[in-house]
Image 1: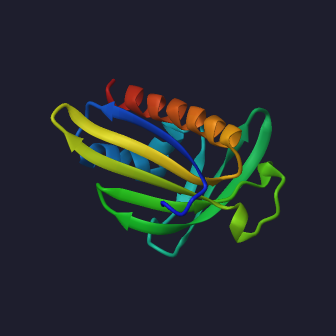
Image 2: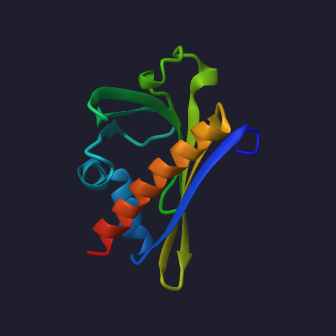
Image 3: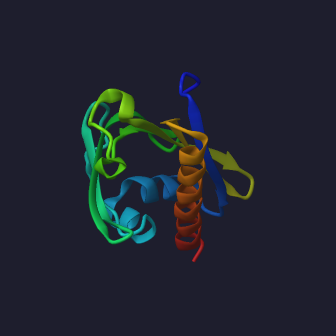
Length: 143
């Protein structure tokens, strides 16, 4: 992801095994519980589409992308486009979103990196959103 211009990054240590964190990242029923009510639809196979649908700040959205890489319990990387940006649906307006899991003595370090943000302020807003999502994930898995 070094070729991306502006990066947004968020990370959290979750007191849970990697297998459980991976399940939470890829099981649509669990995703919906911590990811702001988002409905995710995908096979998670590389090259296959992924959609995220729900409501954000009172507006319905249906974001889309493609699964770029899937290494179970290690790395998940997707492309991501949101019509809510108001930008045209062209490749240069897609983000890359990478979910990385690293085993630690106290659990699993989850790091989300979003590339191809158009500005520092977009990267900052995205990082805040990912921090909130990861906080929700941590809360759910440590209950």
